[in-house]
Length: 247
Image (cartoon, rainbow, N blue to C red; front, side):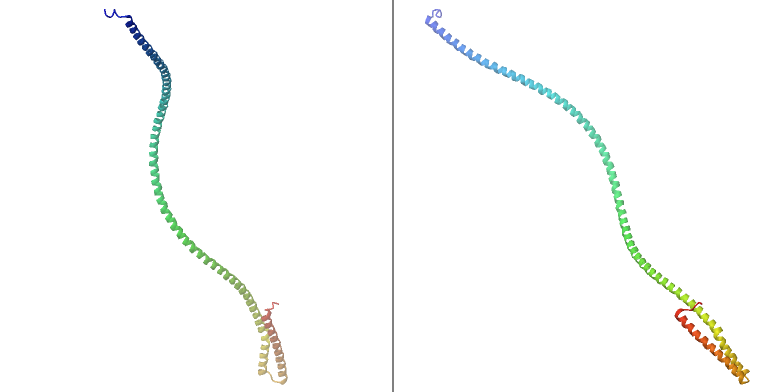
């Protein structure tokens, strides 16, 4: 009953209070609407940003898928390369073993070549010594050949001179034989005559006439002997100067 019996002023106060509350609420609603509008705008912006982000994510996912495909392809390529490298490694291991074997063979060959080189060096030194000896011997032979040539020339000249001397000797012997012939026949004849006449004087001369005749013969024989002696002297001089005249 007390509530119903309120006075008008009180009601007005209450209404004013309510209006004030309503104004406050209205203001609060306006502010809320403004805030909601701002939030809506922000939400739209965020939605647009989310759409862009989603598109970006989709693009990134697409790129990631492409990258994944590339990585898968690259991984397959790496696997293939790994198999090839393993094969190559096996081949290289075999090649290394072959190279090691060849290296051992080359080392053996190098040792053999070193020994052969030492032998060749020794032989070369020996050949050098032999070459020096041969050079000395060759010089000696050249000297001996020169000496032999000189000796041969000397012998040739001596032989030529000897032949000349031999010819001269033969000519001299011929001349001597001719002289002996002259002496035996031309010179000896007067001597024989003289000796014969001398014997006649001793044995048969009995008169002066015969003795004179014998003396004439002796004188003729002596003159003939003198003539032949002069001729012989002349012949000897000619032989000494010019040799014997073949005529």
